[in-house]
Length: 324
Image (cartoon, rainbow, N blue to C red):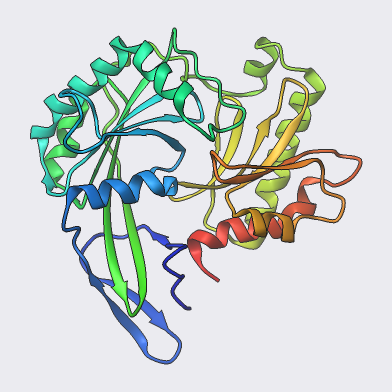
């Protein structure tokens, strides 16, 4: 098993203690932990590599030294249109961070015009994402090298959804390995109103006005893709979201099935453009590359190719996170 090149970091789920690479000849090789010298270095890593945040598109990043007080480090929008407040710390985080992130989340709720302006000014916005700036939910994301246990415990007092991510980097020869450890925060005792909540089963789509046949096709395709995952033994979890099904390795989406509209579907793969085009089936549906989400999109044209024909793309997407 070899390390990935610096331009394509391998995101591991591991604590920032000892990280080993198992080499066929050398056995276990210890990767050297390389602390971030500046908070800005960690912030830039997160902003430029959206896989670290999972399903969040980084929309805006604070410019050091010129930002107004009360503005978070990074503002993003996830695939459900939820506004994400991302706070970066280059120290061990304890429960003292709560007042700060709560203030940011409340600011985000109270300033939809500011966030809409960031969205409109952003180049390479993801396709198929149309946030409702008159009615959106807010989510908090805390990123730090170490998050102390008490922080997780105190998050139960927060009524916003919360993600806690420990991010560290390691050096192995000339290669850089980035480790992402997602901590499970307790469920909040009560929830704020959100358009992102719901159980997205067949009944939900029928009630929402989606085509009945297309709804049946969508769930059949999810089952077919799940069968490929199970047969291949990949460590992938499937999650049904509002307008797409995500196939995730840990907290990162590898590929998925989405609604192009209320009648048609598309497959998306979190791969580079070259890989998407090289691994596409011969009879692939209409294709385009989404620079915003950094993914290839293939319209499902069932008379040309089915879900299983895209297995090479599924495999490559998964192996970005689990190796060969």
